[in-house]
Image 1: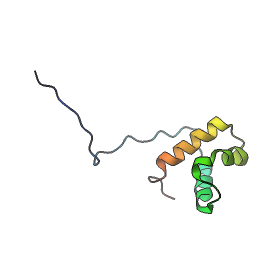
Image 2: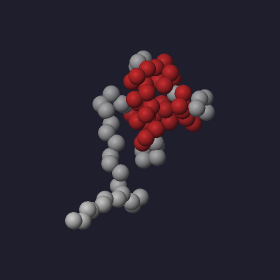
Image 3: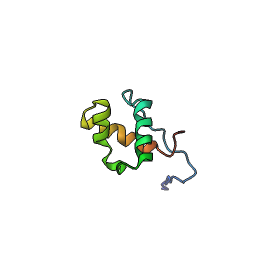
Image 4: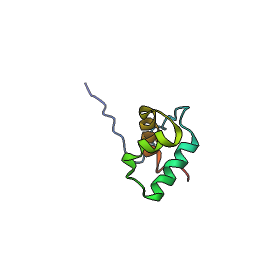
Length: 76
């Protein structure tokens, strides 16, 4: 009996990141600008989102996580 092994190579496309409806382009542009300003290490950017947009800390972490995961794939 043979077993088939499945491997993933670097050339295979990664699944698309799901963008939750509450994540707005405005949030992503804000984080891009914050990064460019050098005001904070981006791992500490959550409180900036809370202050600028009035979101709760959990939501800010979700937005920031999405921004980080998609940073290299988005057109700025």
